[in-house]
Amino acid sequence: MTTLPEPSTKKLGLVIDLDTCVGCHACVVSCKGWNTENYGAPLSDQDPYGADPSGTFLNRVHSYEVQPETGPAQLIHFPKSCLHCEDAPCVTVCPTGASYKRSEDGIVLVNEDACIGCGLCAWACPYGAREMDQAAGVMKKCTLCVDRIYNENLPEEDRVPSCVRTCPSGARHFGDLGDETSEVSQLVAARGGMDLMPELGTKPVNKYLPPRPKDVPADLDILAPYLEPVSGTQKGFLGWLDKALEKL
Amino acid sequence: MHPAGSVILFTVASGLGFGLLTWLGLGLPDVRGWVAFFYYALAFALAVGGLLASTFHLGNPQRFLKAFSQWRSSWLSREGCLAVACLLVMGVFALGAVFYDAAWQALGYVGAALSVLTVFATSMIYAQLKTVPRWNHWSTPVLFLALSLGGGGLLAGQVGPAVGLLCLAGVIQLFAWLSGDGRFQARGTNIGTATGLGVRGIVRAFEPPHTGNNYLLKEMVHQVGRKHAVKLRMIAFALMIAAPLVLVMISSSALMICLAVTCHALGTFAQRWLFFAEAEHVVGLYYGKR
Image (cartoon, rainbow over all chains, first blue to last red; front, top):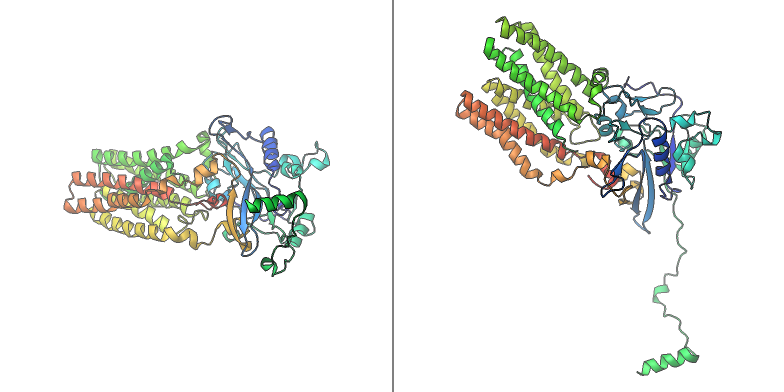
C-alpha cells in the first residue's frame, strides 16, 4: 500500500559529513558494485564503452563551489542518494504499490515485481534519488543496503551500507536517527546537521553536516604593501652579472 | 521535463475523448442509432487510444493491472480507475443509444461525471508535484478541464458552450503561462536550499557527478524545447483557441466544426508539448540547471 505508514520510532538513515568528504567517488563505485550483484535488478549501463555512455546509479557525488561574502571560495563535495524521507512524495504517487516505506525502520524501497516503470516517483522526488533502469524498466533507488544491514551471514563490521563501509575518509555515517542517543543523532546535534530543500516538506531522514569554518590566514601587517622590498646589493658573480647587465 | 510523445498524445486524445463523452452523457446531442454509433466510436477511439498511448512509455506495461490498486493515495491510480469506470458506464449508455433507441439518462449523468473526474485526475497527476512549481497550481486542473470540455464541446457540436469554454481556457492559459514563468523563483527553492550551503555564500555547481548523460537529465532537465517557447506559445494559442473561435463564429456547419476541431487538436498538441518542455524540475538545481 502506497499510503505512508505511521512514522516509525526507528529511522535508519545516513549522516553525510560535507567537511570530510574528499570527493573520491569510492562510495559511488562501491554502491554500484554491491547493488548490481545483489538485491533486485542489476544497475545496467548503456553504451558503456561507446561514445555516449550512461547508466543507473543510486548514489552520485556532485561538487559545488561556495563563494562567501569575504574570503576565498570553498570547494564542497556533495554525495547524494535517497534521503528516506518521512513524508516521502515518491511513495504516495505510486499507482501500483511498488514504492513503499517500511513501517519498522523507515527505509523507502521499491518492490520491483510490482513496478510498471511509469517514472512518476522519480518526478515526485526533489532530490533525483530515483533512476529508471533502462534495461530492466523498473525504478531503482538506494535500499540503504537492506540486504547488508540485517545480514547475519556478514561479519558484524560489514553490516552497514556499502557506501559507509567503503568511505576512506569517514564522511558517511549510518545509524538510527529516530534514537536521540544514537551516535548519528549526537553527531547531527553537535554539528548542526541540516535537511536538503526543507521547504518542500519531505522531512528527510538523512542529514548533511555542514563544512566546518576554514582556518583564517595569519594577519599580515596592514602597512606591508607600502614597504619597499629589502634588497641587499648582490656580491660575487651575481653582483658582477647584475652590474654588467645594467650597463648593456 | 522531457516532452514524451506518448504522454502528449495520451493527454490530448483522452482529454478530447472524455470531453466528448461528457457531452454525450449529458444528452447533448441526444443521438440514436447510426449517428450515435459514430459519435461513440469517435469518443471511445480518442479516450481508449489515448489511454493505450500512455502505456507506451512504461518500462513494464504488462503489469498494468496493478495500477488500479492504489486509488487511496495515487492520482495516477485514481485516473486509471475512473477512466475504466467511465468507459464501462458510457459503454452501456452507448449500447442503449445505438441499439435500443433509448437514453438511459441516469446512467448518462453518471458517465458524464466520471468523464469530468477522469480528466481532473489526469491533471492532478501533474498539479500535485511540488517538484515542478509551474504545474503545482490550481490553474493546471482548471485548464485541463476547460480544454477537455471545450474541445469535446466542439466535437459534440455544442457551439455555444464550446465557445464559452474555449474563451475560459484561453484566459486561464494566458494566466498559467504568465504566472507560471515566475513560480519557480517565487517558491524560493534554489541551489542554496537544495545543497543547504546557501547560508554560507553563493553556491555554484562546480563539477557534475558524471561526464555523460543520465536518466535524471534526460527526463527532468530537458532544456532544448524551451528555445522556441515564445513562438510556440503564439502558435499554440492561435490554433488551440483563436482559430476555432473564429471558424465557428463564421459558420457552425459540420465542415467548419471539423476544421475548428482539427485546429484545436493541433494547437493542443503544441500546448501540451510546451506544458512539458517548459516545466522545470527542482532536481535540475543540483546540476546548476533549470
